[in-house]
View (cartoon, helix red, strand yellow):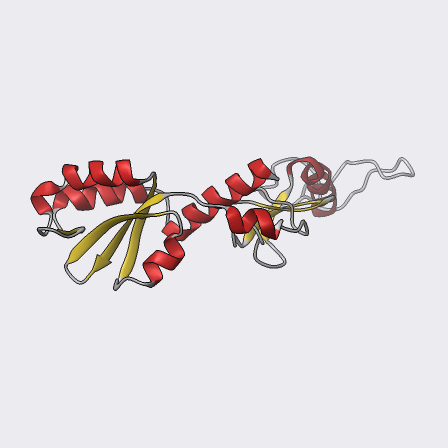
Length: 187
């Protein structure tokens, strides 16, 4: 069995066994010391002590100086300026599924707007306002239920929603990231 040759403070080799498959010829104790040395600059990904106050994210990066949200990079422990946060408005085009149809609408306060609408699922968000919403209504005009913002589900509309959701499990996470970015730019 290979032994760690890292010198201790007294100048003698460590001599502890090296685990099979170790990436470098160091014992577990010295590998952990090397890891901690590197982690002080690059951080360690872990669960935050509590949800991020800016975006609600749960994953963070731990540095010796403290935690940073992995989603929005807000420093854990820093307070959100309530006055600025309450003024934040990001216009989005939202896609809701209700039964066998999809609503394409827009709002600067989607949580409030969507809470007032019948829906089974929030499918996606797209950053933009009325102009983008109207373009999407024209784009999917063949599926539109007359005189409404509701559309019959078909492959072209589902493909569009899938493209918007690529790599995003929960559309609200994306919206939270947009909000936290705006908040960071203002604060």
